[in-house]
Length: 467
Ligand SMILES: Nc1ncnc2c1ncn2[C@@H]1O[C@H](COP(=O)(O)OP(=O)(O)OP(=O)(O)O)[C@@H](O)[C@H]1O
Image 1: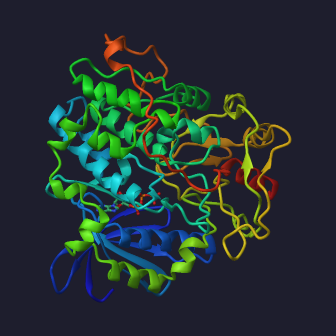
Image 2: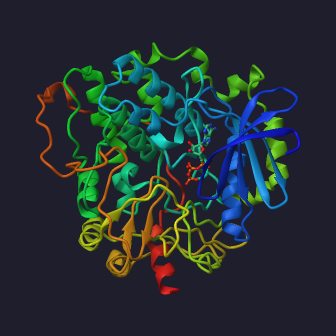
């Protein structure tokens, strides 16, 4: 840390603070994420994973990694400073002034290029939202916050924890289905919608209403002045079946909107890893060094309660439970039980009290110890879990999904007005050319998903049983 001069604290995240520093030798400014190395092993792995993942993602639209080191009890991740702040702040600054179509297309194209790059590496971001997307000083988009990302295609990659922010979560996650590349596409659809309207597509005053809207893909249509290609794209990104959503590759190459998007992308933004490597922009050695430093094994032997504060003692289990699949229609049950719970405001995960998260449990090798078959639930599991949820207040967070006892503030969406936002009021009537917007099925598109099913509901149950 002696190399850097501390300039100011930018903010506090759930795992530590972010500080602006200046490198004493180069005079360049960087952000250092200081993460208190947790005694809790699972959080430690989470922190290390972010550093490793970031070190491997070199792309013009991904926050650049510089180095990571451990000092005292801190893991310090040094990264590019995005002086334009995050996109949520930027959208809020607009108040009621809409962004120009060119601006929307440019930013969206850039975020797609960054996200496509991580998907090409078989990594899912899992928490894409305007608050995790940054603007560099030249106005360029940079995807950040890889704390929730998970690597796919590794039998040891057992990051099967629920991660996400309710407002950006795809319908399949509410259905306890595995997170997949199209779930990231859904979240980016939410960001695109925010850019187009300065509002969130799925605003609601209760969990039931929020989940219903998400699971039905019901959102107020975009204003007519926007090009139909954008309207068509939004409609496709909000297809409730992930298979019907276009991949980022499709969006950038063969979608009706691709031509518009590509005019805003310099050719280097879509460079592949191999191309990058040939041109020397992708520094494998550097990534490897960091991975070694931080212990690559820990990356894939992860046992995490990702992104959520847990009561102490909740993360201790190392049991390798078999994967679970829903027998049928969990969403209805989810909604029944959530109906009475209120969603409350929280900008920070560093909240106190009893919170909810998912976790990953696995053997020391990171694999199911005995190759056990996946078992199916014998009875409808959401009933059980959600009756537990019913005892708690559901807490909204921009960072993750929390349940907290004892509060009952009304729900306020990320882009709600401070007061009196009619989140559940009648949706504005718009003239939409349904025929032109009719989406096609994207059968030939690329699909991949995390290996293990999302068993966050199971973890909720365990957590409450322990208390
Ligand atoms: N590279 C960066 N450039 C500029 N600002 C950043 C950068 N990284 C983070 N920030 C800002 O620093 C603050 C803290 O960020 P951090 O990622 O630590 O936590 P968070 O995203 O607010 O919360 P959480 O950890 O719960 O996701 C945020 O306001 C964020 O916008």
